[in-house]
Image 1 (cartoon, rainbow over the protein chains, first blue to last red):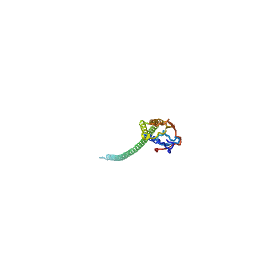
Image 2: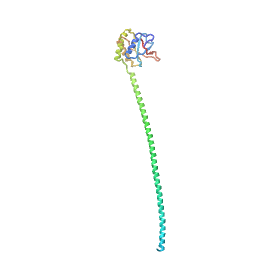
Image 3: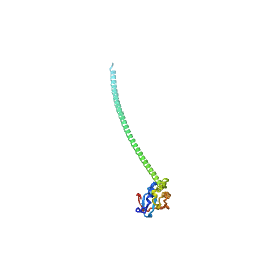
Image 4: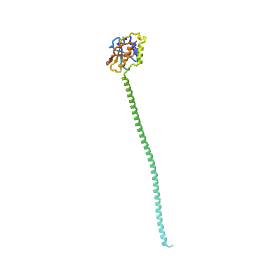
Length: 47
Length: 183
């Protein structure tokens, strides 16, 4: 979860790919309440 | 021969002739009655055969209807049984799905290793470690153990993420989801 897809933190891709490498299926979401520059991993939405 | 004796014999002959005629008539009547009785016997026997055949036909129809009804009832019971089995299978599948949904989720040892190994690759290590926040959805109690596992794995790979928060997405949604990959 990111503040905005227009301003993606540099480490967001690494975290996303690390989760994918672990077999998880993260989806990218935008949340204006997430501070800019922070990558939030929100767990709880099952596919 | 004297005349009185002759007359007596003549009278006797006449009397016997009448009696012979009577009994001949009786024989004829007896024959007629016997013929009628024989005819009645033949007709009766014939009617008995016909009625017996009709009775057999009716009984066959009754048996056919009974068999058809029994088959219909059996098919109905089998259909109902199949529907009940299907309902039971659906209920069992729903129960399994529910059990799967409420099962506490964890990061397996293999997943933990893969996550840490990836974060320790030179490509990942070259990226500056930015701030991470791990949140678990407020109403999903199965998420908390997985959030803890991910936070611990991130920390083991040198990516601290602070305390795990609880978040609730308000009605109407404030997130815009997409499956796209970030660079």
